Image 1 (tube, rainbow, N blue to C red):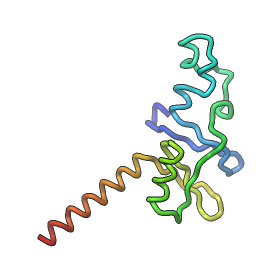
Image 2 (cartoon, rainbow, N blue to C red; image 1 turned 45 degrees about the vertical axis):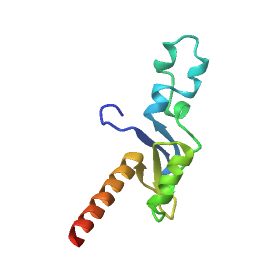
Image 3 (cartoon, helix red, strand yellow; image 1 turned 90 degrees about the vertical axis):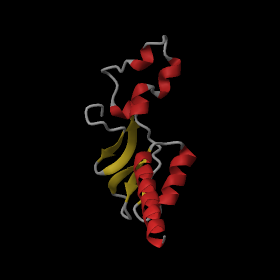
Image 4 (cartoon, rainbow, N blue to C red; image 1 turned 90 degrees about the horizontal axis):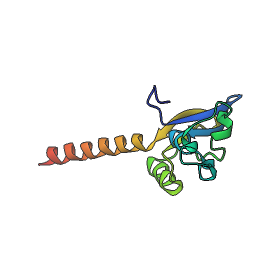
Length: 119
C-alpha cells in the first residue's frame, strides 16, 4: 500500500467483497489500546493476516447512486473510501474522499467557466 500510495484496499474472497483494509488500520489497529506499551501498536506481527486487521462491516455505495449520497455516506460513517458495487454486487471500483474533492473541484471550475461565458 505504501509503495503504490494506496490508502484503502477491498478484501475479496471468491469474487465477493468480504472486508476493507485502510492505512489507518495498519497504523493503529483496533487492538492498539490493549497494547502493553507505546511501541507495540505500531509493529505489525508476521502472524497477523489481512483478515485479522480488516474491517468486516463494509460500508459501500452503488454505481447508480448520486455523488451527494456517496458523500453523505462517507461523512455519516467517518470513512475515507467506499467500495463501489454494481447491481449484481460485483466490486467495480473504490470511491475515496479525494475522488469526491476532485469532482467538487471540477464542478466549481465548470461553474466559474459558465459565469465567465455569461458576462
